[in-house]
Length: 246
Image (tube, rainbow, N blue to C red; front, side, top):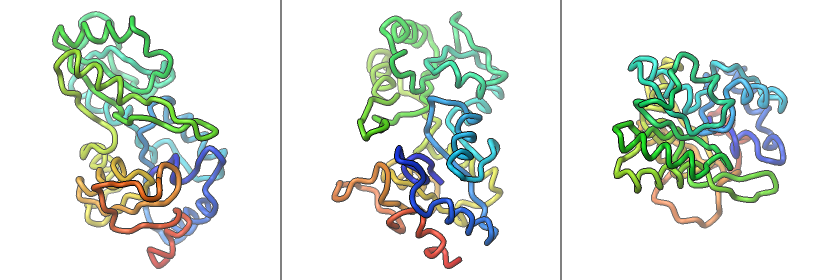
């Protein structure tokens, strides 16, 4: 289940979303939260969900940082981070370095995307470091509805400059969905993704063998052309229990 735009927006919880999750819990339907958010750690995401009235434990939340942390710990690779400093707590056990790193890790750094930092990342890439993108989102929506650049455009700039292709670890990457499936303990054919983004949620989920449910909230834009076709469209997540007949 996606978070921002699906369970809540800048105006607060989507109407009926909290009640929908309660009905899923009562019916014994397992779920996990997956998000491409790279501007805050899982601890803050869980606290935000709880403040909005949603049941949330850190272990039920999957972010690109948690996915890449497992990968880098296994490989013992040091990294140069283009990340908000608070996100480093989700990278516990990862060697953070500016001295010949094995990878450059890119998330949403906002105004921290300075020429100096991008140029340093470029030099590491040219020296052989891999480019790992926690998110390739093109933009995100601020409070009040204003759209702002996300990490994707900066990933694209580093790809263009270095000639390297980035390794993606967030939605819509197949491995990201497979990690959530692993923790659910269910095969992809028994799981559906619920989200508001046709490309990241619908396309990503279907590419990993899940079914995809698109909600008409958040990033959803009526009439927008998309090559991705959801298995089901709902007005909001509030309609999910009825759609599942629970």
